[in-house]
Length: 466
Ligand code: SAH
Image (cartoon, rainbow, N blue to C red; front, top):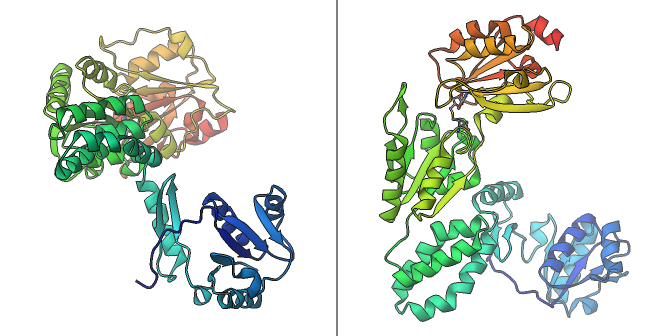
């Protein structure tokens, strides 16, 4: 380790910034945020820096800093924008006995600035010992992604429970178990989801039950359309916490790879047209494992609330009094549209988009087809492949022109995605091509002609027609 990592308390302490550049402004802003009393030594100031002096947030000395001026300061930050100016300023500070940092000149620095990730009171500093600022920034981006946005709320929440935990739990080891249970489970997730009331009552229950009795919970998580890069940060975090995962056929191995290695995996999807487990059985399984204190991950393709029966699961679990968290996912319509290049509501072609299912509980979709057959809208049909012919017929009868563009996106967002386009009158033949493939979505409306298709019928005339 070349540099010693510390966090300096600069609250109300005098700090010198030497130079009036944009970098000096950046440093000044950080120092103000840390509560320091900032004085800038510079003959001229960058406009925003001048504004800070006018606001009285920083003091301005329109002169070169001499050692005698600098002695009173705790730290000095140099950013004059000029190599010689930097060297002189650093030397003056050093002669005054003040630790100095010079922007982009590690050889002139007594201390260096880390790349910072900040979540309120929680601060992460990253240093490569001056070797590579770009590497430090790179690491920062990764840490940014790993730390939940409400981490500082979690820190505050924990602080507010400290006295209570101390008075109610005598042993240090037991207290540690309590904190482990709080910070890595449903209580923390409730805080991170902005539900502090729930978190408080869950934490109180934990305190009352003794830390040994870990509370279970169910996480109903949208896994997106297939590409694991489309998981949300929260989905990823909960996947890493799960003790057991229940998944169906829409969740492929690429996504399952991100579930905690030790988690038990249970497949509860459909096999062809019959369910391997009924919805009631699935509901009971989820509840049973949560009651046993497990963190149960219910991983569902796309979004759990879009044709995903997540609503039924949530309803059941809530009625059982089981803590349940729902995490949205990118639904197939949005994933497929993006990866096939179909702007669902391109303003030249569609003023609305409708998501519908080609398959209802009773088989047939009872709807007013004239409403769906309007020309300036986009229809996205889930589970529509096997009924494509009858769907097309109904739309044609209701008045949608035969030449209306359609697209079929199969295995959208996955490496083996297949897209075909054609006209509505052609939908039946197009659907045939995808019959034995993976999950597929129908997109009907003028925007479908904009797809980057692998298979196109009438492609040129379609694009011209739009
Ligand atoms: N909850 C899911 C939808 C479940 S219904 C979501 O929000 O996406 C299952 C249907 O979704 C499939 O029949 C298919 O029409 C569609 N689907 C899901 N993933 C898909 C994908 N990667 N590509 C194309 N269609 C997909």
